[in-house]
Length: 272
Ligand SMILES: [Zn+2]
Figure (cartoon, rainbow, N blue to C red):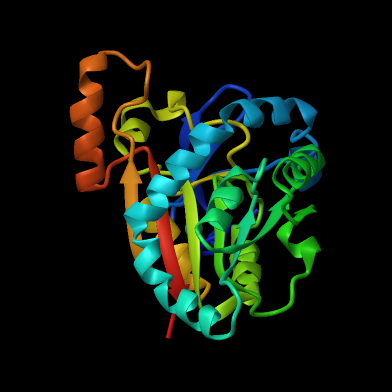
């Protein structure tokens, strides 16, 4: 398989994780599993068992995501979309791809957005429809086949690292976005402190993650699909439970300030 970012075909060993391993593209540096499992094998794992986990953690994930959106400056960036929607007597539209239980969409609706979800797990999509009364398409973004230019904001948290073909995902996200729309992605940061320290034992170096982006490789992938990065934040210097625990507060603070956090969120627009 050629590199999803640059099309390169030469890879160097990065991390051996036992049953699977990560390599690094020698041309662009993108970390990836290669070969990769087929999409169907990946999808089939997001079943009812996964729902119990997501349901238990949905409030915590929602709150983290809301903080990331605030840090990215979403409110100011989306102000024009709110103004033009209000002029039409409607609301700006947000699409959350991989919306899980829908807890974040529910909060965004409270903030004045008109929500739409996409979720690969039928059990979670069903949960979100019933619990939050949200419109959620069960399937992939491509299978939803939204009309071109439908959304003011396309959001995907902890999704892009799971996809075999992140470039096509960005193309489809760009297609369903309005011309002046916003794209926000959240994903583990392979250039963060914990990835560098722990290598193959990093908590995000798992079988489900087909790609591990650094701030640089994710920015390059976005640029290669016609997006321009408007804001980037990282957070999480030291995971809860890691020892020594006294490092958590200073490292969390420093990670946010200097950009070596464990997770990154990136906001992009269509390039001019
Ligand atoms: Zn490459």
